[in-house]
Length: 173
Image (cartoon, rainbow, N blue to C red; front, top):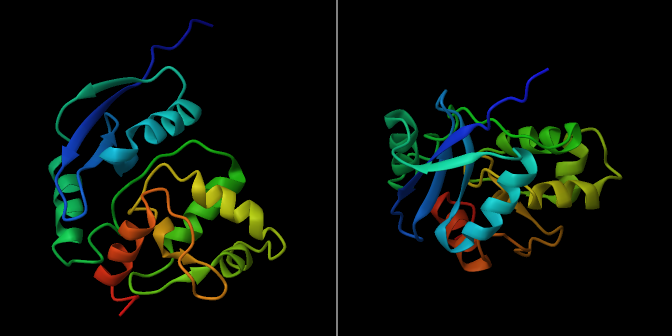
């Protein structure tokens, strides 16, 4: 069986109120990664894990995807709901990421609630680890997961950014 050619992805950059986002899409227009520019090394690490050997070229993401990202930051909190994502990851990780997408804007869940939502209430730590390995920030809204006490816990984009996003969505006063 011949070796498949590496997948070529497009890297777009979009200015937002909380910093430039890096938006990586495939030839079908699915989002493969989204992260903040100051966390580009993390994004590249996650992409390499999920899609070894990929090729990244600067370019423009499809207009509907760009429009959805911009609309989200302009206040249309449901704009990202219909954006197609395609990730690697284990079956467990993809299950956690699907559960994250089910958390509505303006709401939060604890890690325990996230684990319960996937039918594995004892897998709190594993759900937390999967949350932290999410390659598609914002669209797969890992920022909506908080500590059981209501405290803001780690966020790969930084706690100040997490606070801004939750305020933007109305989950924090």
